[in-house]
Length: 536
Image (tube, rainbow, N blue to C red):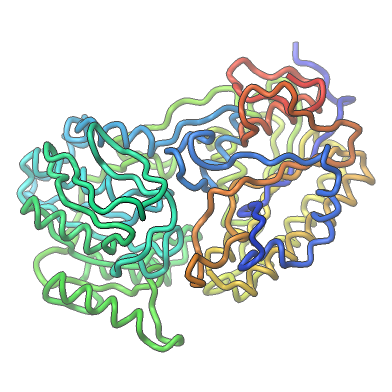
């Protein structure tokens, strides 16, 4: 029989997107913003701890920055969820991609239907949506499987990487993974290395020079020249090709480039690189960095044509029926599922940009609502870029939370506040400061409601971003960071204690801590730990 939880402590969980901790004040939109609420909440050192939100402790490769999807998976699962990138890395290291069952099927379909295979996706090493090492392994695997022609339809990044890293040699700031010996090896200080040779048995024998790396598109083209296989067909910025708010006016530009060849035409890859450099150098009003590159089309019979067999690398949408090279790993007894099994009620709220994160990702990659769960979706503002409205819709999200708290019927209310991350990605420092201040005000509004209706409040973040808006050279920094994030408890007699922790505090410890507050045991699948005094 389900436990009666109506009289147990009620909890409000606020997940700030992109709020990391850094002592560096220069370019730190969080430290330099007016944040009276978060400043006050952080004063009691027994009520705040710092959590790991990147690398191995969230299931990513060592040293890799966290992201929203990974962050919410770990927050909801209450355990370290090893990510697709780690699984794919292992296949890259061990030359197994060419034997992947679904990939082999795709290659056979291509060979039987004209001999053309298109690889469509982001070309960068951001590690959030893709990794260039995986792309090069796929190209090599196409050749191994004797597909006659392989075209790369490339989407450029500029959000999770430097804004001009697609076509230009850039200084590498974060940890670099290189292939050597039997696989990926992390290099913490690229400046100490002159050259390194990749293992020759799979085509990766190109030499690298540090501390500069070749722009991603050049790196890709050099690799294809080396193995004498594959061609770049189209280059389009992610702003158009990967708009997750489904704005057709953006997506149509990408679609027309991919299918109709609508865009600026070039003859050779060298012409492509020169054109990208030209766009980088335009005056600010016309300048195009990687995220915003309008379609560049290489001449030739290289368009996507007609109806195609489609396979996806991982699960991008639970409703899609496409075969997956790497299907999701099942995660049972996530926080939402466990609460539902105990008869608890819960309210999840976010704006469009982060709605999937408080639903699908928080519940371990499962779309279906659990029993007793109510969801609220707030529209993100319809603006070209979020620096134009840096508060986004966080005030409306706060209003929805206040309303839900006032009903006093939910055991858990939670939300995501998006501005620090989404505005942080623009690289515009002053806008990020405004985003942080708006987020702080929203937290204040929710906090007052929690005090009035006796909710314990927990505040954390999924990864860093807005605390680093400039890179080492003073240029805009648009990517996530590897910094720790805060975890705060308020409106409660409970305090944190790290005396008995079994691993460095991380995002996986939030759910067990929350269940501890609610006087609930945690499921055996949750490998995280309660960080409270007297917790386990």
